[in-house]
Image 1 (cartoon, rainbow, N blue to C red):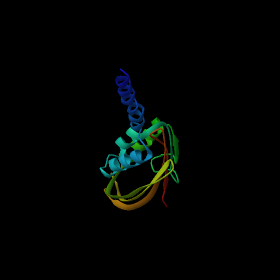
Image 2 (image 1 turned 30 degrees about the horizontal axis):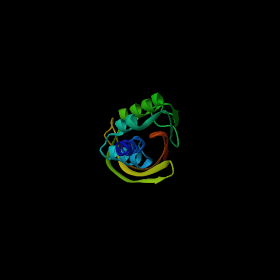
Image 3 (image 1 turned 45 degrees about the vertical axis):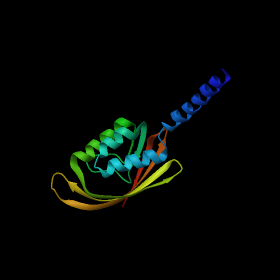
Image 4 (image 1 turned 90 degrees about the vertical axis):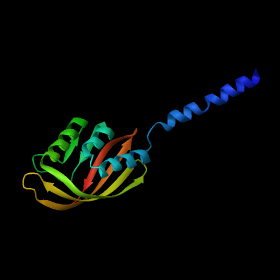
Amino acid sequence: MAGGSHVAVACLIPIPAFREAAVATIDDVARDFTAMLRLGQFEAAGEQFWADDISSFEPADLPGGIQAFVSGIDAARAKSHAWFAVSRIEDLSIDGPFITGDQFALFLDMAIVDRTSGTAQPFTEIALYTVRNSQITEERYFYD
């Protein structure tokens, strides 16, 4: 009987470790988010990984009245939809993710095509993401 109890206790020990492993780490989030971007799944990546209280920072307001700073998932969605309504990304190259603490950075090199004119312009940016509870709570973009 004692042997049966011992086996039952040993079987229960892995369960908490398994549950903890189900929480995505910063490495998981960074790797999966980056993979989705590489596949061109930009808006889907946001939907999967943005926290409800996401904050998004650009160096300046964007064309079409898009604010440089937005807060909240609805505002981030609106910003993304507005940007992709007038632009598309081609020839995307991503270096990273570069991870430290609760943040990861990506170096993006791309061509941005204006949907109205069809003209493409080269564009480079650094994107810095902060992750808490397996979700991106802040994104900051650096470019000139």
